[in-house]
Image (cartoon, rainbow over all chains, first blue to last red; front, side):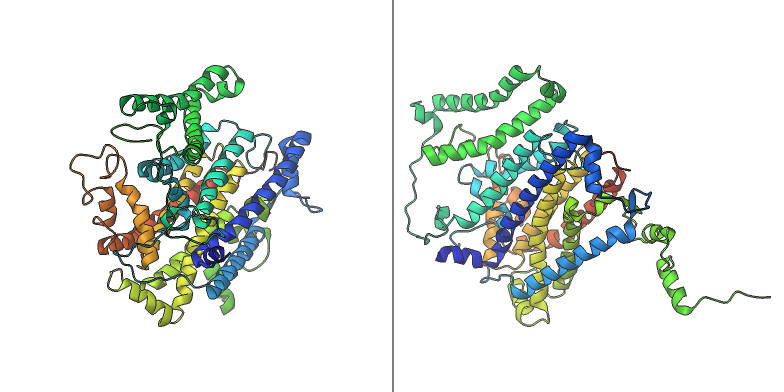
Length: 301
Length: 255
């Protein structure tokens, strides 16, 4: 348990520890609200959801709206006071870390990025830096920006709903909780010297041998190195994204894809398959010691 | 010649400052918001569901509050801190042991920054889960993603400034990625000819091949001037668009 306590005691890890119950609570709240709103929606349409959210109108009021002053501003003031009190108490009880003077000749092992980037650092185990540190973050930002433009489903705007937005919410939860937050937790609690895997209750063994024997995906099928391997890997990657094309050919007559249209579908399929490729590549690495799926003289995937 | 007597002194001061009399009428409630520069970002009236804390969890507002906390505490830190390898770490020690309330101020700056990152994520999650990015609010979601990115860049650039082992190596790990960028990083695929660790994207960021004095100065300027300005301007756009795009989202059927 001593390594776990050491991780928990690091002041910079407090936010990560706070985050777990916070997001758990949010998901539980969301699930209850979504179920309630879905039920109301089925019974009386959006107006019923609105009535529930608005609450009962006080006796004798005609105005369906409230004055910002004082009804909204008093809540803002209270929220601000609570936040400031929490922050002040946190700052009195816990000091920000200050380690020894920066020294370019002494590399700590492990060297960890700031906690909010640990997910990306964890990806370095499975991908080359240009993918883990440049391509994937860029696609995350781009993909987030594109969400409103590729989600053409107008339903479920302004309230919680599960039934109206199953695909959108499942995809987002997978990316946000499964990948982004999940990998941050892995990077914080399960990575020790040499970025080797140590369970939180395991002592950090600095001399632990690293499993170095890796192979490439084509080698699993006995494809020789060099050009055949490159071609095989390229075909594999093409086939992966070809799943998107297959999905279009199979389902293009369906109303959902008709509504989406070709260009929006292509964006959704590309981003979705890329996101899904991350855990697939992780599984290949962890299960079959696969280092690269596709090797070329210029880059490796 | 009967001149009207001036109002009482206190009353005059209050009215001249607030432009609203302290009398609770519906009209004055509206004017209190519309006539005050700090409050006029709000509409004068809001839908009933908008004042339910559970609808927004206050995440957007709390993000902004935490930004303000980092601004105020950050300016206070700048009075003590000098961004050079000779001074930076010793100035941190001075803050911790010598400057009155230096440690508390530094703690508040750091914890508010960490909290801001989390609360911005909560805000993103809330806006996603209520489908509030849907038409006509698509573009404000994009602005929000930009603010999220800036928040993380602000946090990252601030991470280097204490100039301790934690800072230096976290930033080394983070900026090494820039050296692996395709075309513009010297270790990336399709690196442009003639690119070395002294003239690629990472070198631009760090002012040299490694994290040293030049990197400290660059991160300091980004952290204290460029990024806060960008975030502030982005907030103006974000808040303005909330109003222009129809105020807070909600189910149809209300007023």
